[in-house]
Length: 230
Length: 219
Image 1 (cartoon, helix red, strand yellow):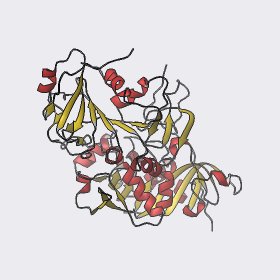
Image 2: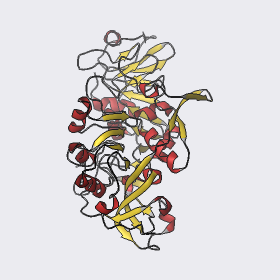
Image 3: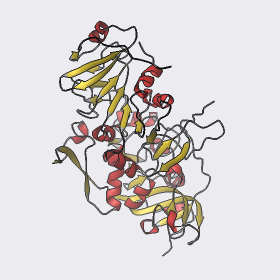
Image 4: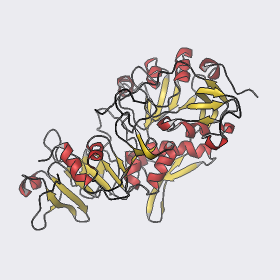
């Protein structure tokens, strides 16, 4: 079976209106830039996006927000985005904010074949509203369900045509977890090589989780908060 | 009255050799500048790094290497990268010895509100709810009062909560306060600040037991 695709347009061709998609990345670090650009070009609407952040006004998921392609956003932190704020306040966009560790672990649960997890994050807060809880060893935990996403769009540094992936530095973040969690996982990489060229000891995501892979192009890798010392 | 750097400097005195520490955004980030000499402290950044180094030199910024505040950073010898589930795994499992974070309100029972002001922009909780639900030792770094001069230390939080019964200590521009079963216990005051002023600016039960020493700042 062919896993290698030509580009983002081809890899995301069957993401349709109303799809539930996960997007890796933390802030603008390690986001699937090519897939986002392809989705923007395709104009797919009514998307539910699961991602830690919602990009900035003119980059990342912010590009899809600007084109009003999102119905719902599930994230942990959505600052730095005025268009997001406008759509949230006007009721155009449905938003579910969940703790960052809960978001990560709900992805992990999907990839590990577990239906749910228990976490203490959010106990006693509005996040706990309507959720089942249990006490273990005297401490209360919330029951949180594994995600059920149609597609996972992830960005890795290197990959091979079997779908094995290696991430770079903190651009790893949510990518390996979401890679495990998509019914169809699409990986874009900076460097695509033949099987055998990556050291098996260094693989972060085994290819079994990855359905489609392509070598991305024109990576901008924008820095949100450029901070330097003297 | 302390400035933000002095609050950070006072909190740095709570650090011990071998500690793994998570520093939140704002004043907590400044604590990294005052790690006492002779001890090893490893900073955890919840986006996936242990062993966070200084900001890079101009020209050496790396878009793949950022902290939880999305600032460019560097690694140190012995640093390690990991994914977000493992990052919150080590937090949940109690491996991180100390968490320092900012807050909008802290209650006398140790509740914290820090992520939402209803009717205004909601930025989200990020990793704060996970951190406060699991950390063994949580110190809040904040100003004693808000921009309207109202106390941020209250008998009960008014804003949506981030976590309950979790804050152990609060360091403000006026005082060091421990959260006890009986309420806010005043431990130290900032140089030049009176106990009376701290009392007036604390809207919760403040326990003043004996003479309250001034905070000490080693040069």
